[in-house]
Amino acid sequence: MQLVDLTPFRHSVLDAATDDGVLHIGPIHRTDAQSIVDLLSNLGLTTGADDAIRLTAQGTDMVSMAVTGMDVTGYLMEDFGIEAETEALDAFILRACPAGTPISLRGHYHPDDETRITSVMTALHDGRRVTWTSFRLRMRDGETLRLSDTSGTFPMLQGYAAAASALPAERAFA
Image 1: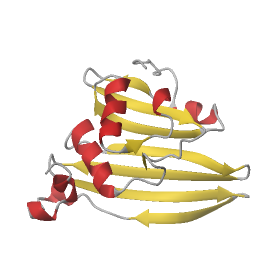
Image 2: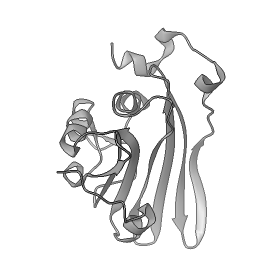
Image 3: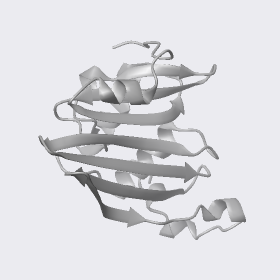
Image 4: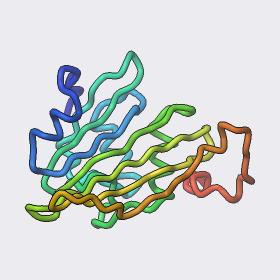
């Protein structure tokens, strides 16, 4: 695994280049793919194809991650195969991503030949707490169905601060 320059390729080109699942995450603090795999593993997380992670430079100190593969679902999973819990995602975001910058986790997979499931999540953290917005869509037979939706706001940008003991992301570091 290495830093691969995918700059000439837009995400839509990468997405269209495969029938496999696709996951994009970024920006992430600049590191190598093995360090990201190690962090995911330490948190009990997987992309579904950790050995296929590719990184694209975003400036001098950030990268974005892209991974494609048959077992990639468009979102991070627990290492035993179910969708990751919010606390594990919070811990990943707090350790891997810059504070105050919207982080995108988006992707898709095809559970069958006629269906595409697309997931879009945006996270923002202030160094202590992560706030999320997300939605998931199913596209089949020319119709789109919204499967889930969390219409969140990013309260830390409006001066809101919750008690530290109420923060799941902080519990992940205890």
